[in-house]
Image (cartoon, one colour):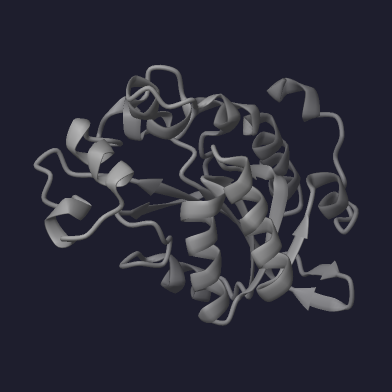
Length: 222
């Protein structure tokens, strides 16, 4: 049975979502890096995501990853379905295919790669809930609360979190296990979630609600 975590005054049955921590977005030599984007902020959050993963696994909290993929044919590109896109996003799409299925670019960063028993949700749009299996999988486990981490805070993380909330899930964002390339956008998301959607806390605060708080494995991600 899944561990029922006592968070403040609520008994919840949680799962962790790790959003799009992939080489194409995060790693040196990935698509974003080759497009000239500064991906250093994304890499800085990897250790905290690793610690969060260990903490959840140690407490029998199911782990779900999302993996954004594109087909090499380009059939699923946004430019195929949208006539109007922000200029910066359209230019990136036209310059270089990002996270093409079956490539290193699409792989989840090895430092926080899935382990046996974890679940990987393939997605083609910003939200983890758009035309994916995740809702069926969460329902089969009786999950009612989702813990969010990953990149980019203000894009795919926030979009997924909003959809989760509107589908009836309670939501928690781990503030130091997620990051945006744009600090202003990150702060805006934090404020939006605090005011309208759920709880925002850092990893150390979150760990205090878990009975098996682990400290021994932290250093391996640094």
